[in-house]
Amino acid sequence: MPARNNTNSFYDQIARYYPLLFRDWEVQMEREGLGLRSIFRNQGVSRILDASCGAGAQAIPLAQLGYEVTAADPSPGMLKKAAEFARQYSVEDRIHFVKTDFIDLHQHVEGPFDAIISKGNALPHVTEDAEIEASIRNFHRLLRPGGFVVIGMRDFGPFMEDRPRFLPGRAHRLDDGSDFITFDLWEWRDGPPVLARQNLFIVQGKGRVYQTERRRVIFRPLSTDEVKVVLLEVGFVAVEDQFDRSERMLVARKPG
Image (cartoon, rainbow, N blue to C red; front, side, top):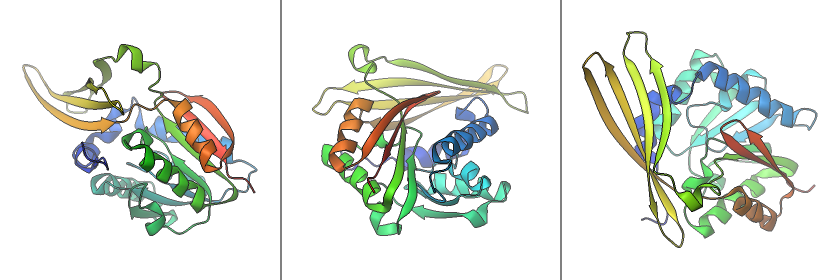
């Protein structure tokens, strides 16, 4: 597997479906915005970098709440979808979109930022130890003294013993009466490092006619404890581990 894990094909292919991977996209965005505002309230945060913006689940509600947002992602398809949502919610003038990944982040955006966020389980796509450290060093470099980093990810720690193969997804009834159903099959590969391949199955149809497509992407099944160690080694302090519905959220501060 390549040293730098290229996820663009996967996310470009699922960008049009992305809101359907949530129970309610509107509610999801509202919760994301309010949850992050509760962290940033009264902390002098106005300029935010969303380092893995995807379709805009965090960037758009943050812009609606009045923050100045730079939204970065390596996937052209996801950036296009996020820009469509930004226009739909009339916040396109408050979000600057940038195509880049974590490793090259410092070459494409200019700090300092008051806060940097990366949610939606993006960091575990970085598979090599050196690249994980480089990514978090970039976050540290681009923050102002006293600034915050927020990393939202699935805690893979509990998965490592059982290594489940099947994980359920979502089921929606669309406006035309058809079904939209997702589920995952995971493949595990012993390391070092241990890697996991997500096979996302998307099933659509109604009556007797259904079509299925499979999209694949690789994760490094990191535990939150592993990421905490890197945050501390890079120089972050006051690392907190919080539950955030479907993922764990690590919040840390750059000294200053």
